Amino acid sequence: MLVRTRLADNRPGMPEPTGQPRADSAQQGSAPEAWFFCLRLLGGRYAFEAPLVIEVVRLGPLTRLPAAPAFLPGVFTHRGEVLPVLDIGQLVGQPAIPIRPSTRAALVHCGPWKVAVVSEGVEGLVAIPRKNLEHAPSEASGVAEFLSAVGRDAQGPVAILDLPRLVDTARARAVPAGSGQA
Amino acid sequence: MTGASSEILMFQVGARVFASVVHDAVRIGAVREVPPAELVMDSALGPPFGRDRGIVVAADEGNEWTLVIDQVIGVRSIPEEDVHPLPAFAAACLASGAVTGFVMVDEAPMLLVDLPTLVRERSGAAAAS
Image 1 (cartoon, rainbow over the protein chains, first blue to last red):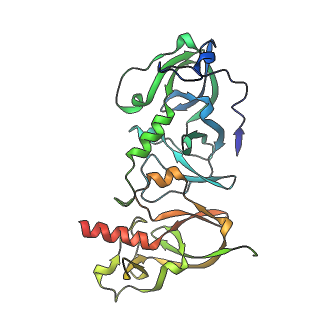
Image 2: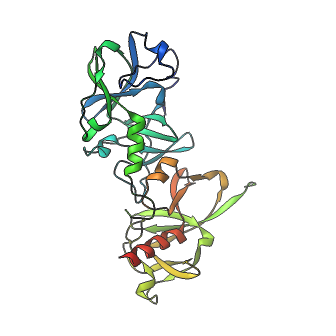
Image 3: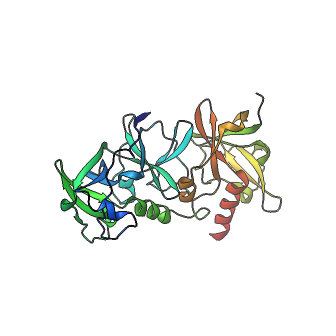
């Protein structure tokens, strides 16, 4: 079920919250606001680079996979395509995000991976004044491990996730095929 | 049906129904005559409820293993377009290489299992322990 599409339009450039310059950042740096895509997770507001999001979907019935890690609660079909669901809560040692018929997920592209990030709620695009973006605290556990910045908009604080690194870490932490079972 | 199709075997292990390519199964029968060392009781698909029926699978240079299942649901012909590979991220995260994809049966995805890989993994794990 399509809830929102065409996120790529009418977006100013993305910020450089980690302080690492990007090749296309010269023009972006001049924008007063940075745009992210915001989800409600783990009782808070978490956002990531908006261009990663393809669309927001309502999760259909999940098919659970044998021998899958906890952060991969299953797959579902969307327009004839089978898509994996990523539960960030389970990845960072928090309770599973409840999956109900009304649950929505952000379908994202992170490098070679296409996954549906399940959420407690979808806020959508948020603009954060660049002056309100700060480096994330240097903690190496829980969800803080994957933060690239913290910011604040009119709705309150937002934690900025380095989603590609999170997805790569999830894959790396999974047990390699053939070495275990469900 | 005019396009290519695959014959799949549907079987139940525990509470779930799985599918495999028909020719992966050598035969189906009772397991009471099978030596315990050749039984695969607890595979990546999970444990069966009972211990009555099994699918005999050839793996490892012709060695036969018997995957214990609860029941055979049936055989069905599935159009090729209803066979889907496992999503790349899911395939990279699973602890078993035996789940290879899905077949759409009555518009619901059913896990497609490579039986030789499944019993090979289990027999390998048993040997390692």
